[in-house]
Length: 153
Image (cartoon, rainbow, N blue to C red; front, side, top):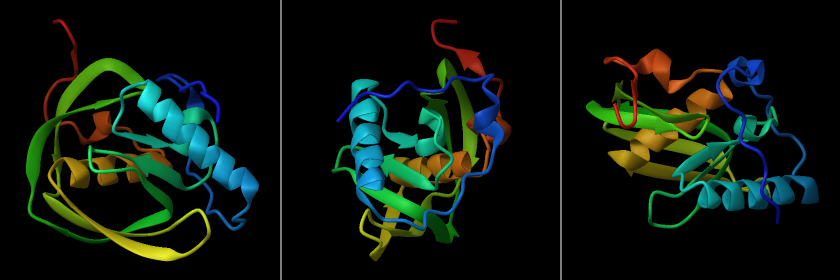
């Protein structure tokens, strides 16, 4: 495993749409392992492959109950709403209140190509939405319903 550099705001790759993963091979497993290590090292709860400069539809999330690996994720159900503060490893120290679904269901493949379904509420739902948005070139700032604040202000 290796730490990867996290792409920061201003890099145009963050605005690009990621490609569907079609090859489930050792390179994909290495990418996922590196993403988990990078996310943990940065004290994040989620990381999309585009944030390490790879335009593939791959996300890792850990909100405290174990790492979830999502390849080609799709939101299949959403309900309710929540307004909470959100941040991003690609926009260090910047936060804003966003409007997100309170509960979501996500269909995704694992590193071997097997389909699985995840359900999340509150922070987990927000993390699913945030990371899947990254795969479509969308940053949380475009979902902000408050001004973007810098930590310490």
